[in-house]
Image (cartoon, rainbow, N blue to C red; front, top):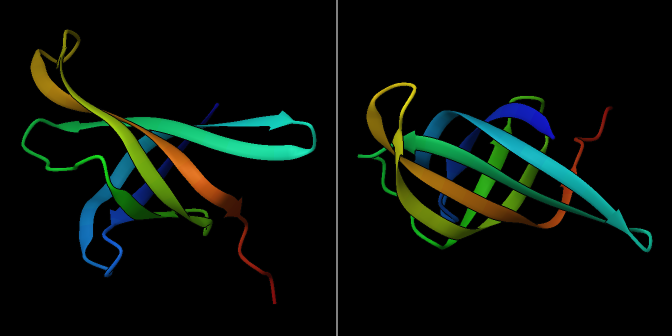
Length: 98
């Protein structure tokens, strides 16, 4: 599982969340690559089970489908957060190097 940072935007380009630390896991099955991931954001951040654009700091981009949003309590930090899980639609492609 990779720990990465990225920006999550709406399909029309409006930035929803910036500098989000997330975990992305790649699986391979029968020659197919799939990605899924998760992140937590402050309780006041608003994100729904919708489709978003993900741009990672390493240049990779993809469409993600948020499939679970739930409120949690972070015992380490002593505050409420929103835990989000998502699936990557298509390839989490590395940008072309010109």
